[in-house]
Length: 167
Length: 251
Image (cartoon, rainbow over all chains, first blue to last red; front, side):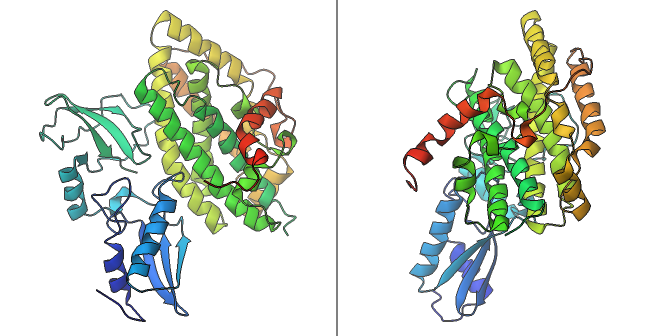
């Protein structure tokens, strides 16, 4: 693996791609778009991250995991900075990562909450069930086991499943 | 040290969200159904998260060494600048969900406007909070329509919540010197400019929920000046006891 005094941005991202999200271990913090930038400033490795949600309780663990991974590769000193601009969006999750999510049993993000104030409860587009691939599904709640997930139910295979909800 | 309106302006934004977030968290383990318990806890987490970020910016701007924890846990009721609406007890589910509708629509409008703040940190936090608020508005609006246009019992209880809470909504839009200075400086928004849009959206939801819109009468105020209902002190006692009994505790 990379073990140089002056790693490039790509090499740092390659290392960080090994760091999985603690709540969604199918994806890395790079694939989720949580890692925004990495650069060397006066021999300090500065990694810039952005939280998925304001109150995401996993951020501390993610930062610790990033530190551990870089230290394991002999890199340091490390500084982790947090940015809120631009605001994190599920649009940053690429096609490959979406396929991994679905294989893991979490439906990839659908459409974000619309601007309409009181949409009819079941009027939104339905998601494909990650287990039986049926489209005969309904959202049970926009809020799930973590801030970034919604709860859905498949009427075809009668399996509840989660969606990585669009934001 | 900053003597300008930035710190007090940030504190009122943060206090609204921290206090309402704590009130919502009181439902954790007591929700009417599992999905709703989880939803309320999620929204509480969003609000407390937004408050933490705002407190962080306020603490840095203040330059007095107070971090987000110090601002949340080591101030007394008289130092809080939240609107009275958010500190009222959680009541029944009708009261909780009507308050969520009233505050979430206000918060969405406020945060959408604050995305244009000249303070880059505040603009970034607002962009994130606006996205979260859209989910909060949708959640509470759906419930108000479901319950208002539901059974006789649910209609009656939600209507009572609307009637009881209405007098606390005026304070959200009262602008004082701090709001006006913040708006003039470009980093804040004058809340009185949000009132018409708020009212239009609330009217739309209440109408669809077959609920009567209360007449505009006397409006309660005082939270922005630190004059609170007795409920806030009791709430803070519960919220702050751990941090005050074990200063600097970590886990």
